Length: 194
Image (cartoon, rainbow, N blue to C red):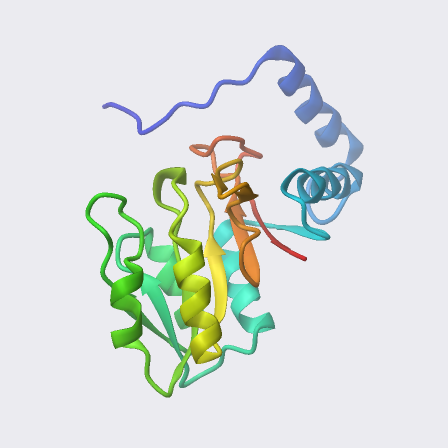
């Protein structure tokens, strides 16, 4: 079997995990989580970064916070992990898949407008493989049609689009800290916003 990825942990990281385990803060919002949130928000340049169990939860709660509800439609890149569409469904809304650019694997802005209906409330561009989507065009369409934008930046922590970090270029950005991501907390995710 060839693993998709195998995380590497040095001695210092293992010692830090041991300290957390010994502190008793193994679930919920402890001092290490709070420190991580502040450092992450500072790094990407947002006011807030809220950690959660995974990026799926971050996408789900972001959509709820933006008012997505049953009967709504949310445009989603058709090349993504199932959790992106699932987060829309968890709100009772319908994911409407939009074709990608075959060169970037990101949502194709020129295909978005034809999918917009009176039920469309948001767009979720996915920054595939850490490569940011064309956020200027996406945000322009969102503004034109009064839609919210939630960036699925699960694989894009640290990636930049025109000098702005992926996950900070729209209403909300969501990140993952799964074991195969650039940084990991074993599992976990967060959403950030200005």
